[in-house]
Amino acid sequence: MTQQRTPLVEMRDISISFGGIHAVDSASVDLFPGEVVALLGHNGAGKSTLIKILSGAYRRNAGEILINGQPVEINNPRDAKQFGIETIYQTLAVADNVDAAANLYLGRELRTPWGTLDDVAMEAKAREVMGRLNPNFQRFKEPVRALSGGQRQSVAIARAILFDARILIMDEPTAALGPQETAQVGELITQLKREGIGIFLISHDIHDVFDLADRVFVMKNGRVVGHARTQDVTKDEVLGMIIMGKVPPGAVAGPGAAQMA
Ligand SMILES: Nc1ncnc2c1ncn2[C@@H]1O[C@H](COP(=O)(O)OP(=O)(O)OP(=O)(O)O)[C@@H](O)[C@H]1O
Ligand SMILES: [Mg+2]
Image (cartoon, rainbow, N blue to C red; front, side):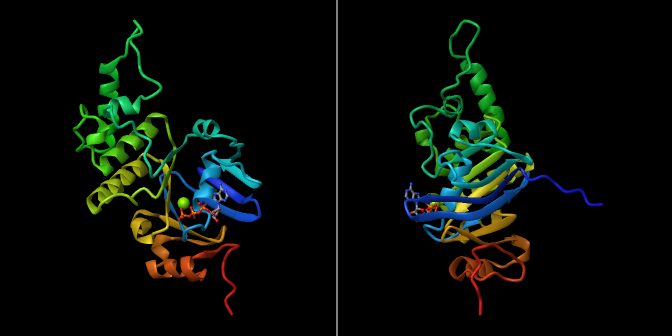
């Protein structure tokens, strides 16, 4: 008998409307430990909205969310954090004028028994976590402002890891980065997978994420067109799903699949 793995995240039949617009319409996605799932689709397809329901920014109108197989209520970002869900936004929430260690501990600084800031302990922990994620990173003493986009990403991700994130949401993580920095984020993602963290990568550009992803889900008009393992489909076939809603043989059709004559 094969053992059925439990998904880290399951979103089932999720819907949300804004006024009359069905931004997300009965969409289902799942994510396993150590897996990268790309969420693809044109501008306005509903990707960010679906994932904001997982991160607690929006409340769904219908559907279910399961974490490790258990139904959960996520009503705000605090709930999401309690389930180990962290979001890395494209506009990175890092404090530019302080260094990496200060960023990792922003708002929950370590203190000595005398109540003063424990800079030594914070820097040691920062070196440990950053060293795991990005061994080449050495610029611990500089304000984050002086770092490259890829290095800033690693600071933001290290911060999430320090919060015990098990589920990482990255919305357009490489959109503002150059090729070298994009490669750096790719290495970071590989390292996070090794640690068993599950990652949702959201992008409107398949080229940004196809090679990083284990599976892709394609959304169109708020619905899931289909999903596939990246090893079972070509980039062109996924483009066909994004543009025409056409589901190739290697993919599983969702409720948003086009009715092909
Ligand atoms: N707060 C909101 N109020 C009203 N409409 C919204 C809101 N958020 C999203 N929408 C609408 O929901 C739909 C889906 O938007 P969403 O931001 O999820 O798309 P997306 O797939 O992330 O697109 P992009 O690639 O441009 O980021 C769009 O039609 C958008 O206008
Ligand atoms: Mg978006």
